[in-house]
Image (cartoon, rainbow, N blue to C red; front, side, top):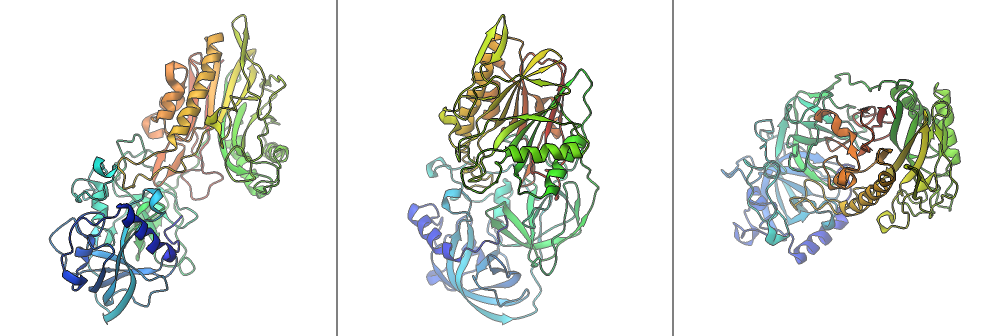
Length: 611
């Protein structure tokens, strides 16, 4: 979402709470007594928090560089006579709550209260935006030239992302003096509210429904062949990413539609803002032109007759109330882009009435509508297996009851049905003569485990392909909800959601080890929306003891991604293989995440191997 969220009611409360908690304490004394004659750089100071926070100031002068008439209404001013300190910004947001009456180029004098607004609230961990609230504005003159923009470029943004947080302040960087020549986050903070400019820049995050996109000013930074910027480790943040929005209301000028790899050509210029949904954002007064570079959706290879093709696909809250066009598009992707895999594990299949919260848990209508669409698209007549969850016990949209579902092509593979599996009954491992088997199939893994509270339980199924048993475990691990952004004032950010996924990964790893203890060379695939990176603690827990291998690591680093978030191409969806699967081909099939028009926000994954 964009920063255009009304916040007038929240400003005073957030600032008061922050001051009481000591989170937004000023870092230095005011440079002017009684708040009179204060310059913008005095208000901004040399840290993230104003040394004058909470104080009334009068006669703050500047030139208006941008006006926002929607959402978070207000305008930016800038001092045309900067000081010599690169750590102090010369720009400032004036929050008016109502539609501003000033225009770009007005010279103004403002009285108001210095506040620190935390987009998303204190619990978000976000940095704060320094601003003037409850302003009294006097227009001194009109038609003045806007201060020349600061150009943000590949050479101006430092390579290091952020300083280490102060241990004495709970890991916060709020009190640290900015080092804009050393750290990217400090550099951007030193330009908060300033009129900035970028030249022609590659798009690394497609236009989203909230009329924003992401570019990079560092063309070479972890670039891949399709134009994205790959997120490869917690220690190697992509410093050149910048969110772009427009100050022109959409009704007046539609926001351009761009895909990853396109170019935002020419100059894009406007004040640098900070918001909840992306951090530092160029709010464009002048927006460049999108040049289409022709990114195409990928198609994977078709499996050979003696290869088993297994896919995983998060279909984003699919239910019968979705338009037929969505079912048709998803079905076409399964048939054409994924080449009709033998087994498809689906995530986010909702119950038969979607988000209507009336106790319905069955999903037969949802799956039938999808499988019928696949047949209509020229694909196989897939059969399906799943286990209905308990009502509202698996997280996701209330009433939606999302779950994992197996589709399989009965002309190529058979499903071994063993009755007894339901929402609360755990499947187990049994064996005879060195051959492992599931006690119930399909069945859920350890559903009573606290790791799965308010989260999707893994679905295990036993398949047979050309006489060989293959175990597939479909997963949808806990989301990253509650984690702090990478632009958090805590550095490194708090990633609280990892604790749950770690427990979930340990449970799945333990189950796989039970299978391998009975049959050392068992063919086991752990698939699904793992909601975590290939380098994460979650993935390490899944692979512990050599039980599994993350197949995405078989790809070149530039191709390891299934999702694009805030301009970072990253891994969330995975297929992991047991040691018995010696040779395979893996493909992250890029058909959604890089595009403005999406059938889902995830890219599907396909693995082909010979059991």
